[in-house]
Length: 418
Image 1 (cartoon, rainbow, N blue to C red):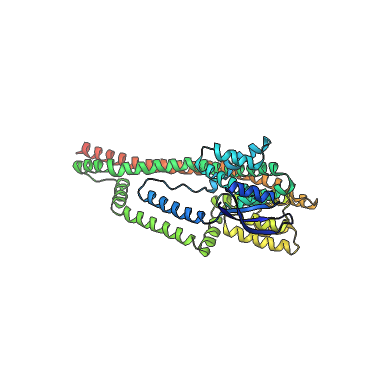
Image 2: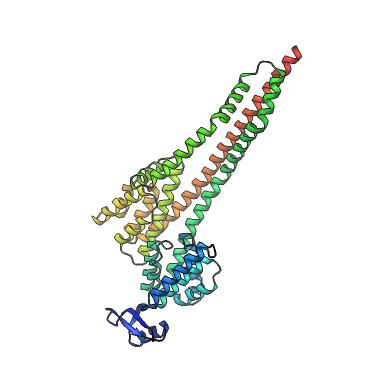
């Protein structure tokens, strides 16, 4: 009969380790439960190591022959749809373990199905939902895990998941607005680049041949146009290589800790883009902080977890300094103001809520204000950037057309005079 090693907790909460004989892993779990133990992990002795070795050898052999594709690891992009699925099942009265079991068999997305299967296996070993989430840090952020843990402790898991999903949907909507704001200007820029290439490689050779055959002095605008085109054709590849090397150097520099901090500091100072990044990060921080405090996480711990949710390292350091001030007894609104990233009106609203002794409503109101600020700023930036790019494209096309037309008119007048 196979033997299994196990790790479990007894009724007093103390850890217990040992081995047990059973016909299967399921039987081993049943025996441990009968002994009033809470299994944490159960593994078969001997065969597990041999099986993993042979399985990995066969897998590597088939992958080397091209007979099997490597499964794509779950990423943070699937967190929102996955949590939405769990929330819907919990709202129907299904327990979290049953919800994951159903998702592991019925989901069509391979990444989500793989994740649900892993989590379901962990739950079967006696772990809680938050513990299983913590084992997938590439999918679930630490703040999400802490919120789920608080929801399990207070018996308010459904509402917590609802708030998490709503917060993630708001952040996704902001990102979608930013993409939409940049898509039209990028399209115009692509059209302008296409027109330039059409002129350089199709129209310019024909125009130069025609002008050479007709003779005559060319106007200054046409000479400037032809000179610029020749420079792009002859030296444009050097500029392209230089730009590519510059971008590669910046990316490599940004990967270093010191470079990442300096890059994030500089990008916050850029007009337009820096404002959007700053407000989006503040919104992320306030939403996470309000969720954590609302679900029983103490203030200092909630600030630390909310701070880690920020992707901008310069802002993360500033909020870390603010957290230290709060631990020293400084008011939360004063600590927020010291970062320099909060709008005065939003801070005033938050201060009113802080004076009542409940900061959660103030944080929610601050989140709503920043959502509106970002929405208005994105719309204004879309109009400004779109107009600027459109005028630039018209100026480029007009310059090309003016250079060609002025040359044709001057040559025509020269022929008529002759």
